[in-house]
Image (cartoon, rainbow, N blue to C red; front, side, top):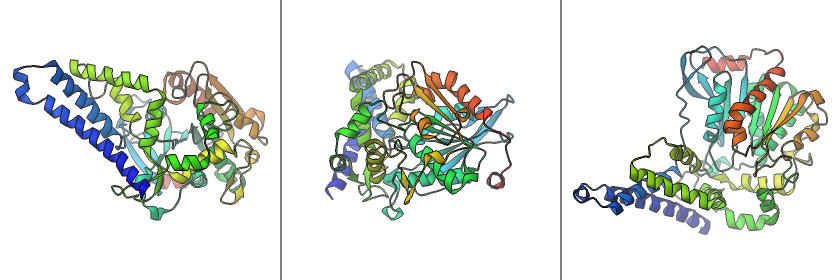
Amino acid sequence: MRSMLSYDWMETLRNTNQWLGASARALGSYPVFSVMPNPALHWMQAWGEVTERSFERMIAKPDWNIDSITCEDGRDHVVQVDTVVQRAFGDLIHFNVVGREEQPRRILLVAPMSGHYATLLRSTVKSLITNCEVYITDWHNARDIPVSEGKFDVEDYTLYLVDFMREMGPDTHVIAVCQPAPLTLAATAYLAEDDPKAQPRTLTLIGGPIDPNATPTDVTDFGHRVTMGQLEHSMIQRVGFKYAGVGRKVYPGLLQLTSFMSMNADRHGQAFMDQITRVARGEASDHDAHNRFYDEYLAVMDMTAEFYLSTVERIFKNGEIAKNAFVVDGKKVDIGKITTVAVKTVEGEKDDISAPGQCIAALGLLTGLPDNKKASHVEPNAGHYGIFAGRSWRNNIRPLVLDFIDSNSGEAKPRAANQNAAAG
């Protein structure tokens, strides 16, 4: 019960700060105060506006906000977000560009489950959707999943990816970003042995911790420094009474956000002070740079306790993927069984989360794959975010990934499952 109370206490603090912001905003804009303008009241209104918005975003799932795109035919096309596979802990969704011929490149983006929603890859989706059929894993917030749905750990995550790849078929090109890279590699190896015909054509791993110990960072040091008991005691709580997942053990998104913010507290503090000043001067807008970034950054989701703990223990502490010793549902997954799927790794030179060396370690595990089906790229001067969503991705990495996909596409085959899905 204590952990449920602490979860509710965090939500109470968040709710209180949102209310304080709303109250300050309302009070500062009270009409009678305009008779005798006071800079302090004007600043209070600005503080309230920024505070209310910030704390409100923490429990809201962002929209994709991809309503239409201009395709290579020069026309604007409406984009529909269709659910292809619906599961308790995550869905497979498709960005269906209405009125456009089906594109030969079928891409499955595997989004990270690391505290943020899949919409963190919004700009990645936008950059690919113009000339690709884009699918993505849309993971659900654990606080909204009833306890009756059971557990969800790294093995369940891997099996979800296996099912999604089977659904999409062999003409698929998988791109895994950050956290899911090792589990996506394992899912591909699982298919290589269990259902070879369902393997994707290519697999691109971007900034993922295949071997976290290859080049240690603060993230890997933390994983080795704390014991699993300490981690469970300090990080795991039970969902409170407000949500459908009441009683489920989770690593709360609000706790994760606190960790994110504390890593660069001075920079975030200055960013909010600058935004309050801009609001007070009338220079801010709903979609300015600050709001575009923080509307996404502050929107966090809970992870199931078993997923968070098993990730730390099995991927970081024990290095099961790095040692090719990962087990799924009682079955050892042998990465060396991948013999036909072309694999490319992408790393950022200045990535301080998954440093260069961690991701390229995947190529050494692919003992059954010919060298001509292996590729790697290290992007100069790029940090973690830049290699999948920034200028480095748009200008350099995206073209390289698409070239890699095209050179390993072979002859595409029609899929009845996809035709049925499109008809539905």
